[in-house]
Amino acid sequence: MKKIYLLAIAALFTFASCEDALDSSNYTQANTSNFPATADDLNSELAALYGVMNQMSTTPLETPWFVNYIMSDDANGAGGTGDVESHAIGHLTANKENLFDNAWHNTYVGIARANAIIYAVDAMNWTGQEKVRNQLLGEAYFMRGLFYLWGVQFWGDIPAYWAAAAPDPCPQQSADEVIFPHILADFYSAYSLMSNGATKFGDGHATRGAAAGMLARAYLFYQGFYKKVGDMTKASPAEVAFGFEQEGAGTSLSKAQVVAAVEDAIKNSGYKLVEDFRLLWQYTNEFSAPAYSFVADLAAAGKYWAGNGNTEEMFQVQYMNAGSWNGNIAMGFTNQASLYCGLRCDDDGAGHVNGDADELPFGQGWGQGTINANLWLEWPDSDPRKRATIVCCTDHFGDTPEIPSFVFTTSCSEDAGLYNKKWMPITSPASTWSDFNTCYTWWGALREQIGGGEIAQNNGNSFQGEHYADMVLLRLADVMLMHAELTGDRTYLNMVQRRAGVTETDATLANIQNERRWELAGEGIRFNDLRRWSGKDGGEGCLAATMLEKQNGSEVNYTMKWTRMKHATSSWKQRYAETDGFLMIPPAQISIANNPEVLKQNAGWGSGVADANMSGTPIY
Image (cartoon, rainbow, N blue to C red; front, side, top):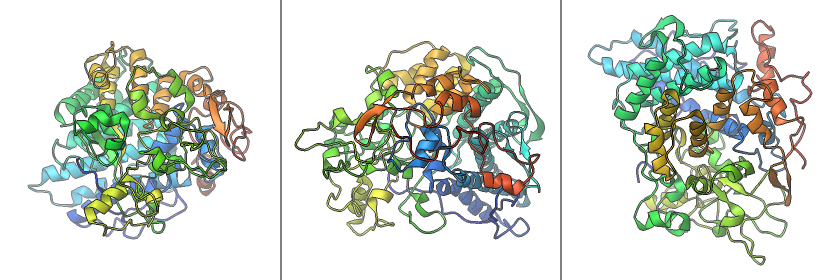
């Protein structure tokens, strides 16, 4: 097993600043007049830049991966009857004004830290170390592009700047005309500047291959959503003119350049598909797999989880045994998405709970982000990835009237008994079942084995804090499918299908759309795929609105009673048409700007929009 234990990006520092024009807080301790002063300072600031993703992880319901997952037709907000935030996000509404304050804050911290590196790098003498300089600069461009991509996909037109410090005021810029050309330039600069093998494989740093993959993701979204290019397998869009020149990127970007970068990443970056789809997910670890019949064949062959930083992972957030309920990053060093996606806690009123030994290898959690029933029903049973991705609890756990296994709890909401195996907490027979706090997840069993029982769980709670699987943000299969979509070439599409054990197809847009839905289900990719296949201002009849509306009437359990989902305020198609999938800009930021020419609210949000705000959990 490779790099499975307690990996992490280095701890956060507080070096870079974000101007008050973008947030009510000041993050500055050192500043650009005195820091960074050396190459070591730049490396420290690069660690701090990556650490922003751990800072994001402290509030999972404000992370791009979890929010986009819940907003898609893959998942329900679910959780308990009091989990209004997750329900609001799943219904494309808001339940409070500060719902996305931390997401905004962290986005601009990341942008500020990336800019600080980019504009300080050539204050150092890199003679004889040009490759090191280019790698560092490329990683900073990559991260700046990533934070801006997340920002515009969340909020559309946002304040933006590309200098050492933000101007005051820093007004909204057009995502279409201004910000996206910069995003594409940043990813292409990163691709051009970095070298294959320049960093240790799987160490959490951006790589040349990852830059090519994110370039493709950004390019497809830009062309599909903003330029409304329908079928990219056949389209020949005009070059994207940047309107500026940037090191490594030049002044424009063509589709041919994107395709060439993606092909280079697939062929030359060192990444390769894991041999069995199931080996991508931590339920195949050697502590759990031998007792889990679904992967008995792998365990019998001595094949276990490919691990964090495996050959298919191209970029990820990493975690370690340093989470705490106190401090700057708090629980951001644990993969809280895993906790959130665990089997719903509480009981059925008779004392039966989920996530105990009877539900091996799936652990207890908040029960949020449950799989929507439509995904289960529409996914062909012939595709092995269906059951490798989703656990159907009513089938899997073999209930008996005397000793029920999985139970719908007295507090559950929007729970169809379908859970996301890719993100769930995993337990094992080696876990200590008498005390969920000390050794409950399989990571706890591993920690005890490695440390001889001497390594403590840092936050004292294995159930809530011992989740260290990478949050995978980009993997090779995704990049291969994007290549098929960019070119209409079936070569890499068929490689993904062969690995999955499904029928190989031509690379038509319809086939690629299906393949992306099945291969990437539950990974937070689907929502923005639907948006880019719909185009901006798609209205209630576009693909995204139509697919989201199918949640209406889907089967769910609400407080132990089966019922049908309904929208909390209007309908999914109406909310999508009103917002185009954009989130509410934090009202506090609009108040700080106090000028609609500097910052104004997105369409479909605000006090004047009756169906944008829900006051409580949907009652079914």
